[in-house]
Length: 258
Image (cartoon, rainbow, N blue to C red):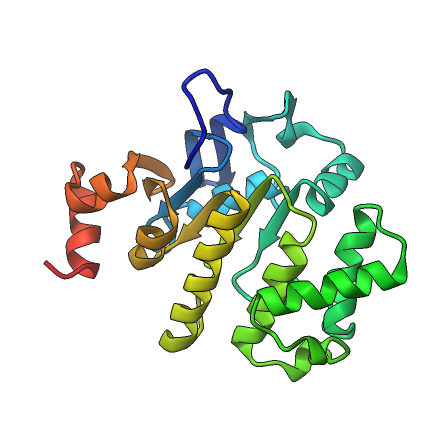
Protein backbone atom coordinates (compact mmCIF):
# COMPACT_ATOMS: atom_id res chain seq x y z
CA UNK A 1 0.00 0.00 0.00
CA UNK A 2 1.53 3.31 -1.06
CA UNK A 3 0.55 6.96 -1.17
CA UNK A 4 -2.08 6.58 1.56
CA UNK A 5 -2.04 8.89 4.58
CA UNK A 6 -3.90 8.77 7.87
CA UNK A 7 -6.21 11.53 6.61
CA UNK A 8 -7.43 9.47 3.65
CA UNK A 9 -10.86 7.94 4.11
CA UNK A 10 -11.16 4.17 3.72
CA UNK A 11 -12.34 2.90 0.38
CA UNK A 12 -14.61 0.44 2.18
CA UNK A 13 -15.76 0.53 5.80
CA UNK A 14 -17.65 -2.48 7.17
CA UNK A 15 -19.36 -2.49 10.56
CA UNK A 16 -21.18 -5.32 12.29
CA UNK A 17 -21.67 -7.49 9.22
CA UNK A 18 -23.61 -10.58 10.25
CA UNK A 19 -25.05 -13.54 8.37
CA UNK A 20 -26.54 -16.74 9.74
CA UNK A 21 -28.00 -19.86 8.18
CA UNK A 22 -30.87 -20.85 10.40
CA UNK A 23 -29.23 -21.52 13.75
CA UNK A 24 -25.69 -21.62 12.36
CA UNK A 25 -23.49 -18.53 12.28
CA UNK A 26 -21.93 -17.68 8.94
CA UNK A 27 -20.18 -14.54 10.14
CA UNK A 28 -20.94 -12.34 13.12
CA UNK A 29 -20.19 -8.70 13.90
CA UNK A 30 -17.39 -8.30 11.37
CA UNK A 31 -15.68 -4.90 11.26
CA UNK A 32 -13.06 -4.04 8.68
CA UNK A 33 -11.64 -1.13 6.74
CA UNK A 34 -9.88 -1.18 3.39
CA UNK A 35 -7.86 1.78 2.14
CA UNK A 36 -7.14 2.70 -1.48
CA UNK A 37 -4.29 0.64 -2.87
CA UNK A 38 -4.41 -1.88 -0.02
CA UNK A 39 -4.81 -5.65 -0.19
CA UNK A 40 -6.54 -7.28 2.78
CA UNK A 41 -6.20 -11.02 3.19
CA UNK A 42 -8.83 -13.02 5.08
CA UNK A 43 -7.80 -16.49 6.21
CA UNK A 44 -9.27 -19.33 8.22
CA UNK A 45 -10.08 -22.98 7.90
CA UNK A 46 -13.15 -24.26 6.08
CA UNK A 47 -16.30 -23.02 7.79
CA UNK A 48 -14.60 -20.03 9.42
CA UNK A 49 -16.95 -17.58 7.68
CA UNK A 50 -14.49 -15.95 5.31
CA UNK A 51 -16.36 -16.89 2.11
CA UNK A 52 -19.68 -15.90 3.68
CA UNK A 53 -18.26 -12.47 4.45
CA UNK A 54 -17.00 -12.04 0.89
CA UNK A 55 -20.29 -13.25 -0.59
CA UNK A 56 -22.24 -10.72 1.47
CA UNK A 57 -19.98 -7.88 0.34
CA UNK A 58 -20.35 -8.98 -3.29
CA UNK A 59 -24.13 -9.22 -3.03
CA UNK A 60 -24.19 -12.97 -3.62
CA UNK A 61 -25.76 -13.37 -0.17
CA UNK A 62 -28.01 -11.00 1.74
CA UNK A 63 -26.55 -9.99 5.09
CA UNK A 64 -28.76 -10.10 8.19
CA UNK A 65 -27.24 -6.99 9.74
CA UNK A 66 -24.44 -4.49 9.39
CA UNK A 67 -23.25 -1.81 6.99
CA UNK A 68 -20.60 -1.67 4.26
CA UNK A 69 -19.94 1.91 3.20
CA UNK A 70 -18.34 2.50 -0.20
CA UNK A 71 -18.21 5.98 -1.71
CA UNK A 72 -20.77 7.11 0.84
CA UNK A 73 -23.25 4.32 0.02
CA UNK A 74 -24.13 1.22 1.97
CA UNK A 75 -23.58 -1.49 -0.62
CA UNK A 76 -25.51 -4.00 1.51
CA UNK A 77 -28.74 -2.09 0.90
CA UNK A 78 -28.24 -1.00 -2.71
CA UNK A 79 -31.14 -1.81 -5.05
CA UNK A 80 -30.35 -4.78 -7.27
CA UNK A 81 -29.85 -2.73 -10.48
CA UNK A 82 -27.36 -0.46 -8.71
CA UNK A 83 -25.59 -3.48 -7.22
CA UNK A 84 -25.23 -5.11 -10.66
CA UNK A 85 -23.95 -1.85 -12.15
CA UNK A 86 -21.35 -1.56 -9.39
CA UNK A 87 -20.26 -5.14 -10.02
CA UNK A 88 -19.86 -4.50 -13.74
CA UNK A 89 -17.85 -1.29 -13.41
CA UNK A 90 -16.17 -0.28 -10.14
CA UNK A 91 -15.95 -3.71 -8.49
CA UNK A 92 -14.74 -7.05 -9.81
CA UNK A 93 -15.09 -10.56 -8.42
CA UNK A 94 -12.63 -13.39 -9.06
CA UNK A 95 -14.24 -16.75 -8.37
CA UNK A 96 -12.35 -19.83 -7.20
CA UNK A 97 -13.74 -21.74 -10.17
CA UNK A 98 -13.18 -19.68 -13.31
CA UNK A 99 -16.25 -21.19 -14.96
CA UNK A 100 -18.39 -19.27 -12.44
CA UNK A 101 -16.94 -15.98 -13.68
CA UNK A 102 -16.82 -16.65 -17.42
CA UNK A 103 -19.30 -17.23 -20.19
CA UNK A 104 -18.04 -20.55 -21.48
CA UNK A 105 -19.90 -20.35 -24.82
CA UNK A 106 -18.39 -16.94 -25.66
CA UNK A 107 -14.89 -16.40 -27.04
CA UNK A 108 -12.02 -15.24 -24.84
CA UNK A 109 -12.16 -11.83 -26.52
CA UNK A 110 -15.91 -11.72 -26.11
CA UNK A 111 -15.60 -12.36 -22.37
CA UNK A 112 -13.25 -9.41 -21.98
CA UNK A 113 -15.23 -7.30 -24.43
CA UNK A 114 -18.49 -7.77 -22.54
CA UNK A 115 -16.95 -6.16 -19.49
CA UNK A 116 -15.70 -3.24 -21.58
CA UNK A 117 -19.14 -2.77 -23.13
CA UNK A 118 -20.74 -2.80 -19.68
CA UNK A 119 -18.44 0.13 -18.90
CA UNK A 120 -19.58 2.04 -21.97
CA UNK A 121 -17.15 0.97 -24.74
CA UNK A 122 -18.78 0.67 -28.16
CA UNK A 123 -16.09 0.73 -30.86
CA UNK A 124 -15.48 -2.85 -32.00
CA UNK A 125 -11.89 -2.27 -33.12
CA UNK A 126 -10.92 -0.61 -29.84
CA UNK A 127 -12.62 -3.34 -27.83
CA UNK A 128 -10.82 -6.08 -29.74
CA UNK A 129 -7.43 -4.36 -29.42
CA UNK A 130 -7.93 -3.88 -25.70
CA UNK A 131 -8.95 -7.53 -25.32
CA UNK A 132 -5.82 -8.64 -27.18
CA UNK A 133 -3.69 -6.43 -24.95
CA UNK A 134 -5.22 -7.89 -21.81
CA UNK A 135 -4.83 -11.46 -22.98
CA UNK A 136 -1.13 -10.74 -23.37
CA UNK A 137 -1.02 -9.14 -19.92
CA UNK A 138 -2.34 -12.33 -18.32
CA UNK A 139 0.00 -14.53 -20.39
CA UNK A 140 -2.54 -15.84 -22.89
CA UNK A 141 -1.50 -15.82 -26.55
CA UNK A 142 -3.56 -13.02 -28.18
CA UNK A 143 -3.89 -15.27 -31.23
CA UNK A 144 -6.35 -17.29 -29.13
CA UNK A 145 -8.74 -14.36 -28.80
CA UNK A 146 -11.46 -16.22 -30.72
CA UNK A 147 -11.08 -19.49 -28.80
CA UNK A 148 -13.69 -20.33 -26.18
CA UNK A 149 -12.73 -20.78 -22.51
CA UNK A 150 -13.67 -24.47 -22.76
CA UNK A 151 -10.59 -24.87 -24.98
CA UNK A 152 -8.30 -23.50 -22.24
CA UNK A 153 -6.63 -25.23 -19.32
CA UNK A 154 -7.81 -24.45 -15.78
CA UNK A 155 -4.95 -22.02 -15.22
CA UNK A 156 -5.66 -20.22 -18.48
CA UNK A 157 -9.34 -19.98 -17.62
CA UNK A 158 -8.44 -18.34 -14.33
CA UNK A 159 -6.13 -15.88 -16.08
CA UNK A 160 -8.92 -15.07 -18.54
CA UNK A 161 -11.32 -14.46 -15.65
CA UNK A 162 -8.75 -12.06 -14.15
CA UNK A 163 -8.44 -10.22 -17.48
CA UNK A 164 -12.21 -9.93 -17.73
CA UNK A 165 -12.43 -8.49 -14.22
CA UNK A 166 -9.53 -6.06 -14.37
CA UNK A 167 -9.89 -4.70 -17.91
CA UNK A 168 -12.01 -1.75 -16.76
CA UNK A 169 -9.64 -0.79 -13.94
CA UNK A 170 -11.99 -1.51 -11.03
CA UNK A 171 -11.53 0.30 -7.74
CA UNK A 172 -12.07 -2.86 -5.68
CA UNK A 173 -11.44 -6.52 -6.46
CA UNK A 174 -12.88 -9.36 -4.38
CA UNK A 175 -11.04 -12.67 -4.77
CA UNK A 176 -12.35 -15.98 -3.46
CA UNK A 177 -9.56 -18.61 -3.32
CA UNK A 178 -8.07 -17.34 -6.60
CA UNK A 179 -5.48 -20.15 -6.77
CA UNK A 180 -7.63 -22.91 -5.30
CA UNK A 181 -7.81 -26.22 -7.14
CA UNK A 182 -4.83 -25.52 -9.41
CA UNK A 183 -1.60 -27.49 -9.64
CA UNK A 184 1.25 -26.12 -7.53
CA UNK A 185 3.28 -24.92 -10.53
CA UNK A 186 0.21 -23.23 -12.03
CA UNK A 187 -0.56 -21.61 -8.67
CA UNK A 188 2.95 -20.15 -8.51
CA UNK A 189 2.69 -18.58 -11.97
CA UNK A 190 -0.77 -17.21 -11.23
CA UNK A 191 0.39 -15.70 -7.94
CA UNK A 192 3.30 -13.98 -9.65
CA UNK A 193 0.88 -12.62 -12.24
CA UNK A 194 -1.58 -11.38 -9.62
CA UNK A 195 1.12 -9.77 -7.52
CA UNK A 196 2.44 -7.89 -10.53
CA UNK A 197 -1.01 -6.68 -11.59
CA UNK A 198 -1.95 -5.61 -8.06
CA UNK A 199 1.22 -3.55 -7.65
CA UNK A 200 1.28 -2.02 -11.14
CA UNK A 201 -2.39 -1.07 -11.10
CA UNK A 202 -2.46 0.00 -7.44
CA UNK A 203 -5.47 -2.23 -6.89
CA UNK A 204 -7.49 -2.38 -3.72
CA UNK A 205 -8.49 -5.97 -3.02
CA UNK A 206 -9.88 -8.40 -0.49
CA UNK A 207 -8.46 -11.89 -0.88
CA UNK A 208 -10.11 -14.83 0.85
CA UNK A 209 -8.01 -17.98 1.07
CA UNK A 210 -7.00 -20.87 3.29
CA UNK A 211 -3.45 -20.67 1.87
CA UNK A 212 -1.15 -18.56 4.03
CA UNK A 213 1.42 -18.50 1.23
CA UNK A 214 -1.06 -16.58 -0.91
CA UNK A 215 -1.58 -13.83 1.66
CA UNK A 216 2.12 -13.70 2.43
CA UNK A 217 2.71 -12.72 -1.21
CA UNK A 218 -0.35 -10.56 -1.87
CA UNK A 219 -1.76 -9.03 1.31
CA UNK A 220 -0.68 -5.89 3.17
CA UNK A 221 -2.90 -6.68 6.14
CA UNK A 222 -4.44 -9.88 7.40
CA UNK A 223 -7.65 -10.85 9.16
CA UNK A 224 -7.92 -14.28 10.76
CA UNK A 225 -11.42 -15.74 11.15
CA UNK A 226 -12.69 -18.59 13.30
CA UNK A 227 -16.29 -19.71 13.81
CA UNK A 228 -17.61 -16.68 11.96
CA UNK A 229 -15.66 -14.09 13.93
CA UNK A 230 -12.45 -12.15 13.45
CA UNK A 231 -9.95 -13.28 16.08
CA UNK A 232 -6.85 -11.37 14.96
CA UNK A 233 -5.96 -8.58 12.53
CA UNK A 234 -2.76 -6.78 11.71
CA UNK A 235 0.01 -6.32 9.19
CA UNK A 236 0.50 -9.59 7.33
CA UNK A 237 4.13 -10.16 8.29
CA UNK A 238 3.42 -9.35 11.93
CA UNK A 239 0.47 -11.74 12.15
CA UNK A 240 2.28 -14.58 10.40
CA UNK A 241 5.63 -14.11 12.15
CA UNK A 242 4.33 -13.27 15.62
CA UNK A 243 0.72 -14.48 15.95
CA UNK A 244 -0.98 -13.46 19.19
CA UNK A 245 -4.22 -15.46 19.22
CA UNK A 246 -4.04 -19.15 20.01
CA UNK A 247 -6.00 -20.10 16.90
CA UNK A 248 -3.70 -18.05 14.67
CA UNK A 249 -0.70 -19.73 16.28
CA UNK A 250 -2.15 -23.14 15.49
CA UNK A 251 -3.03 -22.08 11.94
CA UNK A 252 0.45 -20.77 11.26
CA UNK A 253 2.32 -23.64 12.89
CA UNK A 254 0.31 -26.23 11.00
CA UNK A 255 1.01 -24.68 7.59
CA UNK A 256 4.23 -22.68 7.63
CA UNK A 257 7.64 -24.19 8.27
CA UNK A 258 9.38 -23.13 11.47
